[in-house]
Structure formats: structure tokens, C-alpha cells
Length: 96
Image (cartoon, rainbow, N blue to C red):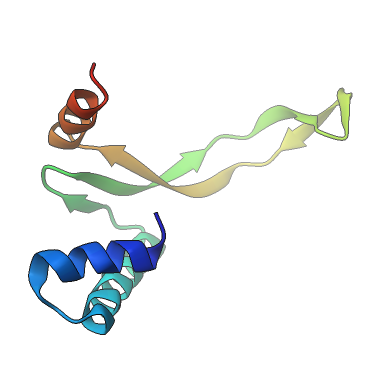
């Protein structure tokens, strides 16, 4: 789903204009990104949490030469952990 598709859904549910819906989505995403940049966790109760994760250094495989091993350095990455309500809702929708 594209941002504009999401904005149309928000517009239909809220009565906001399409422009207002897109601005609200953009503001929310920017706020989440700023919080993650500051090392903060963003918890949306019932939906999930955006977190900053540290990925340990490890050995990897060169995709151009699979027989060659490479060292991958430690890195900081954003992550998302789905909340129980979201997990249950998706599982129900997928027939599980």
C-alpha cells in the first residue's frame, strides 16, 4: 500500500481532506523517525512498538562470490515489534 492509498483510507474514516490526511501521516512518520534518531522507543498501545536495535558484528557471505566470507560490522537498525492485538487481528484475517 502506498502512502496515498493510506491517506485515502484515513480520509474516508476521518472526513479530513486528502491533503490533511497525507500531512497527518507524514507528520506521524516524521515524529517516529525523530524519536528513533534520538534512541527512543515509540509504543503505540495495541498496535506495536518501533524500536532501535543493535545488530551484532557477524560473518556474512559476499553475494557476488558466495564462497567468500566477509566481516559485517555492528550496526544500529530500526525495528518494529507487533503488539498482541495486531498479531491476533492479522492471524484471524489470514485464517490462522
